[in-house]
Length: 212
Image 1 (tube, helix red, strand yellow):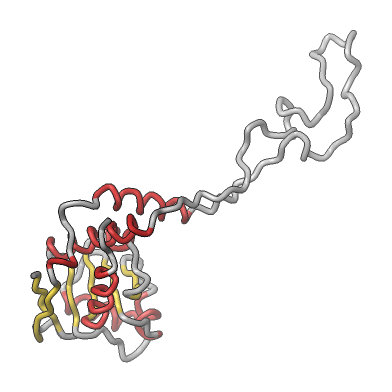
Image 2 (spheres, one colour; image 1 turned 90 degrees about the vertical axis):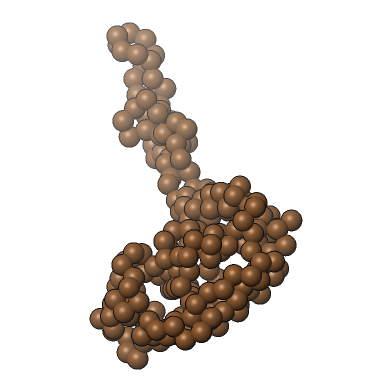
């Protein structure tokens, strides 16, 4: 059983929350984490690079000059890849870089990463995270109150406009919901701030992560 301290908006301890050992996994899953992160990063690639093949370059099929007698190398068409302005040989074309990951592997990876955050003490549980106004200075003051100087991920049960707007101008901070937060986000940020209600949702996700 892992016990996490719950803090209020002023940084004072207001209680504790427990996470059963059955919901955590530290013995296996490192390869699953690697596979899931690679797949997630690959999915972020646009795959929009595009070049024209010789058959797609505009131009006629007229021979640039006669075959023999000019002293120059023979040429059949101006769309040839060896010509400037011609087609591109073996160039990139639009494609999807998406990779398929088994659901069990994804669940195991999430379970392993969350367990590491709990074990390392990089998981900070808040009673709630609210901002009265959508102002960056208020969110910056919150970070200062909580003593957070590193990039941080805020995980909440549901997003609130004030919180999202107040944090979006801070490049080292990201806000995610408990049902949508992924393995890469948990790995990317050295500090994870999560609300008490969001922990309950995470527990539900962990309960389904059988690690098979």
